[in-house]
Image (tube, rainbow, N blue to C red; front, side, top):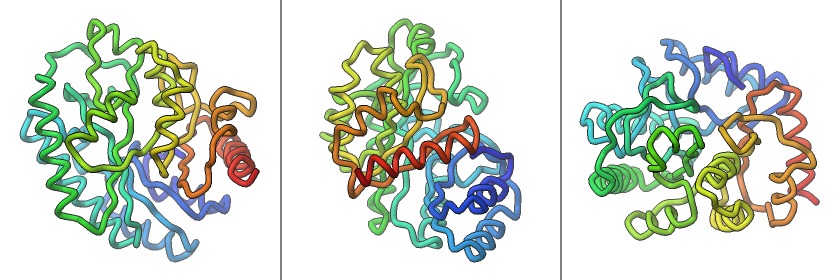
Length: 276
């Protein structure tokens, strides 16, 4: 659910009866955002979880722990420290973060076609990411940190001449990253759908790998070409794959931007799959 103020988004969902709400990006900073959340949590008995780009920074930027720009990296660490503080305040021990990028993305490019610019050296960016993530994880042992698989669209892959400028977009990426840092995976089924199309990977095979290693899953759908946060198709490929696996003991977030009716429908579909 998107609105310019996080309090407005949360209230809409709370009024519909949703109790467990993931706080994510797409909203602007305003001084009262935390007090708004406190009031809504108490009034509706809500549970909150922090996800990437939350809390909203005073000056918008794209969080990137793999950045070789020290200012971007410092701002990223600072934002995650705030997310840790809020997670502790709201008694949730999980935080979802996007894996890094081999470029710095502009705020108006999130989820869209990215402009051409110089890329970071992959090895240098990987090492910086591993160092920063490990330092954060070690400083907050009471928090479980989840890294979300990124999405590489066909358009962005072509822009960079078939160079993947995103970390963690496939099974092989996950296996390699796991050699260097200890982390849990936040599995975004829609991100993977696009990445598999772009990279010519078998979606079912990749899906089965990620669903079996993750207990935290983001749900939406798309046309396989771009991350659209579309409604979940009842007879679509994603629902079919979800139906084929054990979904118990997992947390799910619906990341659907096509309207409240689609969110409610997806909730009922997923509830049916979990309790089938």
